[in-house]
Amino acid sequence: MTHALYDSGPDQRGYFGEFGGRFVPEVLVEPLRQLEASMREAFVDEGFWSAFRALLRDYVGRPTPLTEAANLTRMSGGARIVLKREDCNHTGAHKIVNALGQVLLAKRMGKTRLIAETGAGQHGVAVATAGALLNVPVEIFMGTDDMERQSLNVYLMRTLGAQVRPVAGGSRTLKDATNEALRDWAATLATTAYVIGSAVGPHPYPFLVRSFVRVIGDEARAQMLDRYGRLPDHVIACVGGGSNAIGTFAAFIGDASVRLWGVEAGGRGLSVPGGHAASLNGGSVGVLHGARTFVLQSAAGAIAETHSISAGLDYPAVGPEHAHLRDIGRVEYRCVRDEDAQAAFETLARSEGIVPALESAHAIAFARELAGRLSKESIVLVTCSGRGDKDALRFASAAATS
Image (cartoon, rainbow, N blue to C red; front, side, top):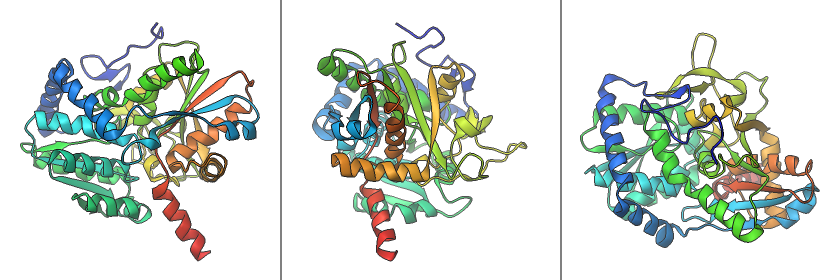
């Protein structure tokens, strides 16, 4: 069954409803067309998918498990909370799935160099890992602020053989790293594949990324039916650019009985200028990084400063498919503030022995709030998008100096 207002993919122009498209300099139009053509050829080639599935099984360690968070459920006082454990992937997050898919496609296209942007560093680590495995050189663009707060992942990228290119301009975060990656790609098109890290950017990237990461939702749906004999009542995932969320939601969009929730970074609060990264709750329709979507911007269209305790959610826009899902009312998007995400980070660690990424902690915080309002017969499924090693080091340093 398909949601009455929802088509499962973009139209021929690359739009999800009113959102998406290809707003790029002329130099990138033909490379994007070539990427789309190669993607469509690969997607009807069973050999491509067989190679991808084999890597997920034998290298990444999929399927990832479902874990019923019984202690967290008792503390929340309502619905059963079940976690989809993307933190159990090789490299510690869902990002490796998309990275391997795109690098396989790049090799199929004959590309000999990979570039990527990263915020929290998990995508950078994933691309560096895929490049090492598949023998393709990698360069990663990363804002200097993010390099400081995610120093462990910077070390891991370099250990894996990638060059990390510091970006010191602008806000020195993910937005600026993406700008630099796009500039590099425009100058090196013949040899370079740009491995984008979320379901953002110009067409066909949002659809390309969703096609790989939907394995998260497909697995979770099958696991729920196998273990519980039914689908969850609610599905929750954190949303920055939105790849783990769209990968989760893709399998449940057609199920009218399942309510879908995306959780953005509320930072210091929506009323604080530059104090959050909640594009769908505090932004307006605009264009950023090649797509029409919801953007944090001034009335004149200048991109706003953002803030989040989580580097991976600290981005002033969101993937166009999420904008469409909000527009048609299929997914509800909420915010969680920094302090609530940090509290959820610590609570999950102490109650379940699972240290989540700060990105995931936003979804955990909202899940606790929602579960407490529901009956004990309800099931809330939450995607734990990654593990919190990278964030634990930051908190440990803060504790040592306090």
